[in-house]
Image (cartoon, rainbow, N blue to C red; front, side, top):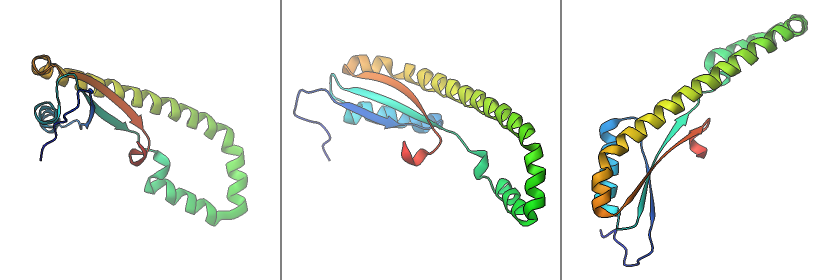
Length: 141
């Protein structure tokens, strides 16, 4: 199969990479060798995925249990609501901080890996970009 194009218009080639070093190196290397022509740009992208705690099994059990106790449980929950809101706010900020740390680590990984391909890309006259995205739902990226 011939992937080369006969046009002189530069292409952008998106390569999705994981944090698996060997797999990612192989994908980028293949894209440089096989897909890229002079003046093309290869974009290596990694997506950091957030995990929502509310979708975990344990939280679903808590919701079901509170439904069983009915009105009595609702009154108790109303009195605790203010404290719960403060706890949720704290958890939200902790989650944001954790996500920022994940993004920083992913950026460092992608950039350090890209350094290994600079000479090859210069020789083939191919541009190389690193991108890190964030999603709470990887199916919609």
